[in-house]
Image (cartoon, rainbow, N blue to C red; front, side):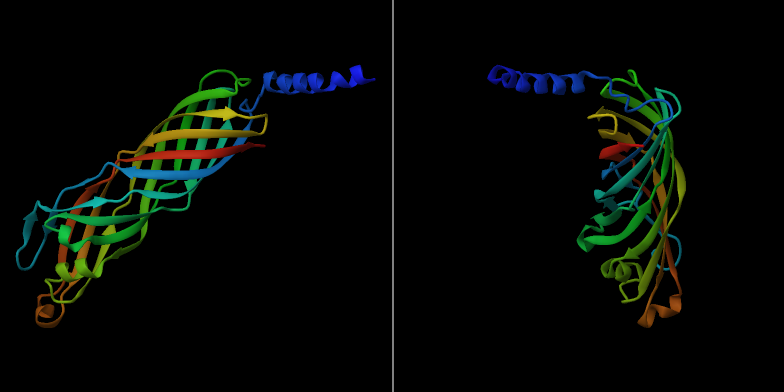
Length: 245
């Protein structure tokens, strides 16, 4: 009897090894996978300088520039496998908030404003290897539509835009379509659960239109209008856990 029980740990160990050695089949034709995780957006940004379109000192100010902060948010992705290798992913998530900080002649103002970015994307992906492989690299390309909400300007920048009169200012950021290029890999722990890491690049620009309303002695000048172009070109990292159903 003691000898019989001594075989039990060996049998258990062999069973675990067999489970890991068995085909995973986590990403095969017809599979649907939902991933939830962390988006990190790192803009490779630049700005064109500020152009004042009317009123006193109208003209182009190339040193009135800005930079965009990094952002983090919750990401959700839904992937459908049409074949064992070809899949399409819809990337969604909570819109991240970016902060705009002054540089050059605007550096002393600190934060200039902030906005939330909405950028749902559709990406076609090619997965290397077979459906039974646990580790599968992939590459992909797709498109995103980007727009902004909750756009606000700091009091310091509103005052500067309103000719230092203590007035108010608002901004509008343009929407646009942009391509998405991505690469990464998934690792399947079993038939249902997996982990994924991807890195994407989005060539992206937005035009900012600013309208300031001077106060006091400058109120009679009427609205003061400005514009600039901000290049974002973010690199987006997505680390997530996936569940197949």
